[in-house]
Image (tube, rainbow, N blue to C red; front, side, top):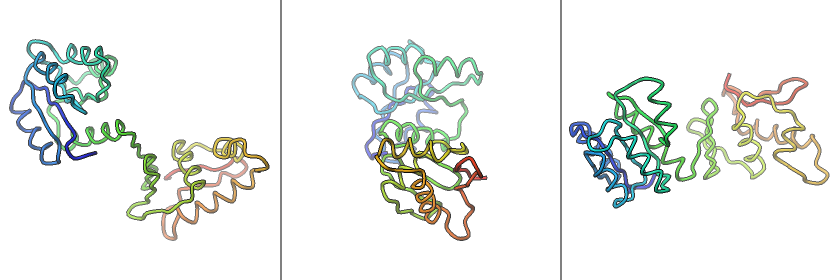
Length: 225
């Protein structure tokens, strides 16, 4: 999440907009507000935001119409829909027409900020895989367990990332070999056992709950419980 990221808030309730805007600016965002559908659509073209917070109920043109126009223009800017209607149908409809997320009013500002951070990470190509207190950052290839940084070789990282993308799933040695080592000549399933042992020493430190489990006769699983 970069300082200066442009965020457009389209919300006709000025008390809500007036509350959200300074909170975002405090975190280093560049924020512009619009208070009706047509001006929101105009600001989306002129301001070129990197994220849009869009109320559904707007004068002039509702949020659905604004979102449809944004998507029709070819823009894939992340959009969080604000709605006072907490029904499954409204939520599904928002997502179906191209929203990336939604939040129901009244909302907690910390929840909104968490949604924004998640969408911006996704848009910037950053993805965090989490299993219990283990975190794998697929963009930076950094791995942490709680406050502890874990230094991995390239192959160790590839194995751990694949397991983190398939948490709790039992992965056979043959399957891991095919997906992580591919068609490398002369490599056998013994190498999987060797690298699992390497990972165990680094991921499951003494005194920590074990995350890498051996499933007798079946393979391995990465899971928190």
